[in-house]
Length: 203
Image (cartoon, rainbow, N blue to C red):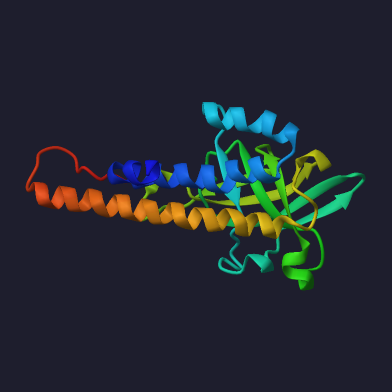
């Protein structure tokens, strides 16, 4: 209901709200460690950190089991390399919930792991221009030898695909609330007749 009401006036705000809560906050609440929840969630809730959900890739936007971003084990750490695209808030994020391959590509969904990756020099961002919802910070994000530890694994190694699917199921409900709220805002404005000033529904 909150997302629907926000989206009557700003679909961008409604969209960001549902992505952060359904895809990121829920993932940490359900699958994250106590340390992850205590460190990350208060910063997201206060607005100190912008959080982003990094799943989609140029190779396989609708087939998350085929992602190519890799996390390789080296000297007791994970080294992540890969490219994500159409990442909401990717342009501004302080922390990414990132999904990477931790096994052979042939293993598909059985070799995907979720990680928390903080923004640093290893993250390269290119903002994407959108026709609508231009405030969502959509971006192409490249991860170049980003090093994370075992404490940054969300859930268990090779069980990240389940996290992605559970959170996407929630997000599909959320995005329908965005569409419904936006439709209501457009209808309200159409019925109100000519008006002065900026449009009721903004990008």
